[in-house]
Image 1 (cartoon, one colour):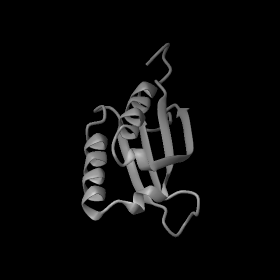
Image 2 (cartoon, rainbow, N blue to C red; image 1 turned 90 degrees about the vertical axis):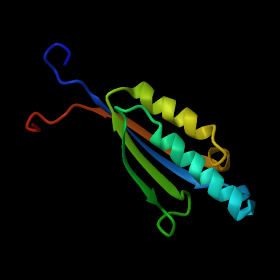
Image 3 (cartoon, rainbow, N blue to C red; image 1 turned 135 degrees about the vertical axis):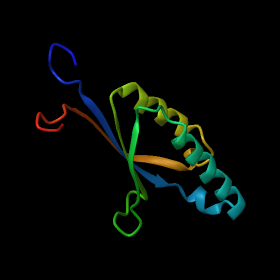
Length: 110
C-alpha cells in the first residue's frame, strides 16, 4: 500500500500465432519445444499468476493461443515474455496482440 491506496495489479493478455514453420517440425521437436515453453512458464516469478492458457483454434484466424497473467510487478511480466521468446517454441510464435493494464483491487474484496 502506498499513501493508503492499494497497490495496483498488472495484467497481460498475450495472443500468439503459430508460424507455418511450427507445423514443419517433426513431432519430437514440437514435443521438446512445448516442454521447454512449459518449463519457462512454470519458472516465472512466484508473485506472477498465470490465470489461464487458452487455445483459440477455431475462434480466431489471427491467433492460436492466449496467455492471461497478473501480478504486482510489471517487470515480472516482461521478464516472462523475454524468457518465453527465447524458447524453441517462442521462436515459432508471433505476438499477434498484446494487451496490458493496471487496476487497483476492489475496495470490497477481502
